Image (tube, rainbow, N blue to C red):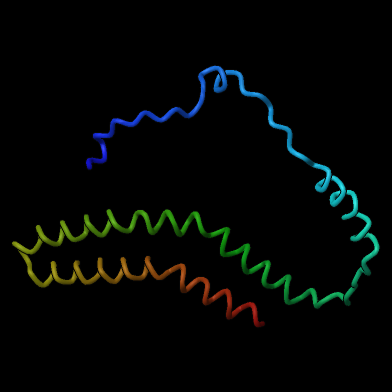
Length: 135
């Protein structure tokens, strides 16, 4: 028996039923009854109130979060530029390698250190903001 070699013809419906469907009526009596009782149930439930929490802690957290989000576009741009600039530095170091190997090695080290610092800069900034929130 083959999957695509079937001789059965299955009729699903008529074309007129697809083009002019009859609207199906759904019983909504239970839904309406439940929907009308919900406001009454919620209005009769007791409302709880609590004392206001300390404002200074949440304000400091909000300020620190807004500082981090304010610098996000700048850090994203710098991280995006880090790859091509590091590639250019390594290419230049590769060309300098033919003339002066110690200078080329120093260029590669500086490019690597700069790239790593740029990549961990957001982490350092978040850590610095978290430290200053405590003061």
